[in-house]
Length: 473
Image (cartoon, rainbow, N blue to C red; front, side, top):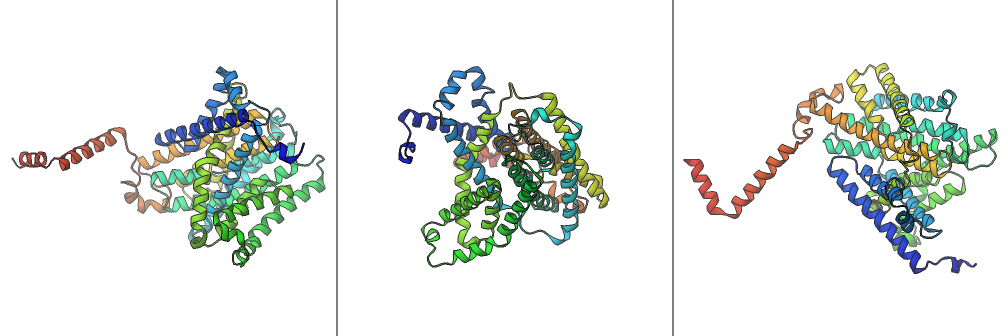
């Protein structure tokens, strides 16, 4: 069969794939918006929306309808998977060009201390965990225990920069020293862990695992990482000024997308994970002049967050099978294990740096929020056969729960008027009024009634004069 004959879909296949996409997109946006209105992270709603269409709800109660929509023909799953992978690649790409690239010098000490404590101790705990607990039932089809140990280490140490940023923005503390320290630490922290993930995925791609293969995979990943960050920005800058760069003249958005997929393709050919390539591409694109490429980057971000990324998270929900692959005891045990060692590593490091207990605990809670990166880690490990479905479900749920816990804790701290950092104590009065105030339903209702009365008075001057006369009496 020729290529031309394979690049085609029947009317039935087209109708089913478009119906599946419409349902996933609607569920992701509807529940994402609903959860956002309820002050939960949008990603929780997007995954929840997808889970309603998956084996947990629709597939359990109406299996024939579930198969009719999502398994109508042999290649439908692969077509959905392509959009899913586009969403993952674009999510990591825009995360790359939005990460913080400059840090305050006065905060460098606490950033370095937090980075070491929140990375080394939890990662080592995860690495040695299979030596004390049998994780073999949670191995994926590849049965690669070395990659599994790296994945567990990353799962314990990883932090969500986007989710914790959104929490800080919602609470009005994004400009505080505490937020800057946490975001700077989490940025460096996750770059290190993405390197580790690239190594884990590189190891699982080989059929025969040997010491030389391990060394080669590590060296190749590090070389790719260093070359991309040190050399590629200069090459891209040179390419931007070329007279015959028709890509950039045709479409700057197209040029940036080309860079993203070029890096991903090269990474894949080198057996480095394509998601890592997209992430590095985003960092490189982030160095390009904002005045020339700012609008193009914003356009790509908007399209990604409107279509590809919501479908990515909805498909994660579609994959979750909470009926047959959710082990409550294992989930609770792993949640306690992960949060304890992440908090312990951060607290030990910060106490050695002579920070007070409240400041140290606040930072530990922030570093425990796994969110999007934790979900990405779970999906990559599951799709590449490193972990099985039970561990996949556990990692996704832990990523969601830790974000919810972090958000609730910071709301509680701010409602009590406690400082996030001891050095911010003098800033507390300014931050505990409007910026840190958590609105209540009665307060919002009263404000809405007053607003309606003012509009009514403005629309009826005679009534306004009567009210004023009554006030004067």
